[in-house]
Picture 1 (tube, rainbow, N blue to C red):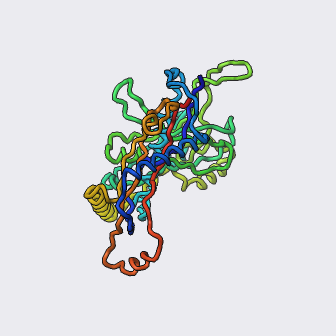
Picture 2 (tube, rainbow, N blue to C red; picture 1 turned 120 degrees about the vertical axis):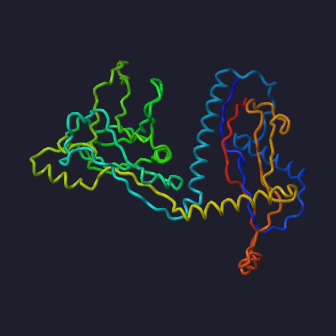
Length: 386
């Protein structure tokens, strides 16, 4: 018996209420449902590249555990990706992305001598620690929209390796010996001997945590991605990887002598050239007056939509739940998992809410094609078919 695990975009996962002028007649929901189910039948077959359902298929058998395992892993992965996309889209579509924001720059406080030479006690060959004082921004914690950590990678002609992968971690306050001491944020591959460049990391979550919990501000760690071992395919050897050091150098963190060759004059010139490249945070905040106005408008809009949608469910344009059971509604026994899925849709009359100063727009709108509600999101459905 052959089983397939397939994923395809199917219908609506979330539908928003669209308010527009409509002259829709009373909706025959039963007829609409029947047409909807037939449309879904055709769409699923199309996604599976079938012109018709399999004609001869036996009664469902127990699916092998290894196939179920693949199905579960695929489903969980797609749900995780969908959640991340939804969160990103929510941030991009929010009013916060529309309005101008105030930008604040917070430089890393100097902790090395003025000549920028690293004392031996501070030098760590495998990682660097960077700390910031964000206490001045704590009163605006709720206004934070985005935070970026920027550090300038310097050219290091002395580097023993040409390319390294560096990772950024948030240092955590360890509660006990079993608690994690760091949280991964992001990584970048850098060319250690190439011309210098700015590296940027999104650290919004970390800074947001610092602004609300001052005691958790322990800084960031820049470290080398150093796996515990290296696998050599040619001879199947596993070589322990313990000796590689962080060859990337950073302005304001590493001493000039660690990456510059030459006399004292050359070192001073290099130091002056990199003087404005201190590691820093860029915080983007919504002004307080704009945030208050925005939250007020958002509350009013949500209240209006919800009240309108649920006053008269049968006639108004609203989200309609529709669960498709593959066996009951479509007569299909050849799809083993899932048993069905939510194919929600939007239907009903959609009036437009006019303000007192839009008479001209109202007249003009009557001469154009009327708008309809549509899907706001689609999602991947993973199925086991026979």
